[in-house]
Length: 369
Image (cartoon, rainbow, N blue to C red; front, side):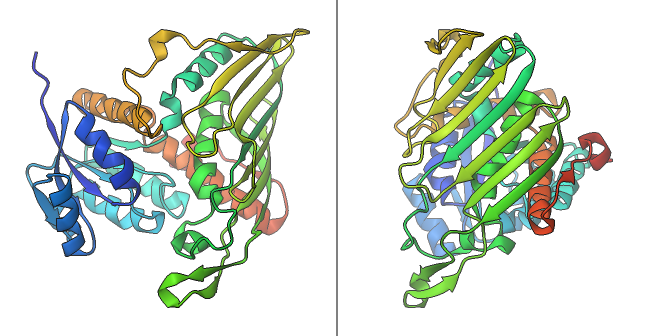
């Protein structure tokens, strides 16, 4: 049986050019039919560079193209809501980068819009497709740790530790900037996927670098109000305490680690690779009373091909999941439903920080109703 090709439009050419374009060009069932950039000359330049047939600075024009069946959006998050609405109202399938939108009410609207228009919308939560994470999930499902006593998550990197890094939309909370949207969105999805729903949370958000130079304004210092460090306490629905610490301003930070302690054993998953947030994960396990030992990741979970940029291989698997959903005519995890929950937890984190209090988390089904 010959599998049909699906035409894709690329919207967003930062992360989109680094990962989305090579990912879709690598996949055997997708071909990039068009690329969007707000600057038409830039759109044409990118199209010429990657042999993409069509270029436009009008999203409506791209969505109307019959050769486009799906659209990937990786623009800054403050643009996601309106762009995604245009795509879904055009009855085109959607792949949406995280953070989903500016707030959960917008993501919820997109979730319902996708269902109303009969299209498949997927969120790019790629850690679900990394082999070490998949085996970690299997060990948890097989009850290796037993009754969980404590979950501790650190994601400490130096990507924005240099105060000379330029000011842009990332510095603005109202634009969806900050480390919470950048990596906290992933962390919240990982918690939901691996450990279940959250009952309540309490958060403290800070900004260590309150000003950055704007190269478009002669290097003038501009204010930063988006957080670069977050400490969050969560109580899961099953009562397990969870501690989450994330920061983008930690020189020589320990990287990304998830530790799970239970009455039967301990699992530790982590990577100290500060240059590539996918390459380098290792899994360690210890039955109760024994020392941690590294666990071999089963070959059946291995990527069929790896790339210099570790993000590319799991993104190709996200494309696989999206195409499977399109073929089946139904949503598959991680859909916008998971995107809604991640966004909801981010909203409540900001609320907790502002009120200096614990905040209850509603059940997802009730929130989506």
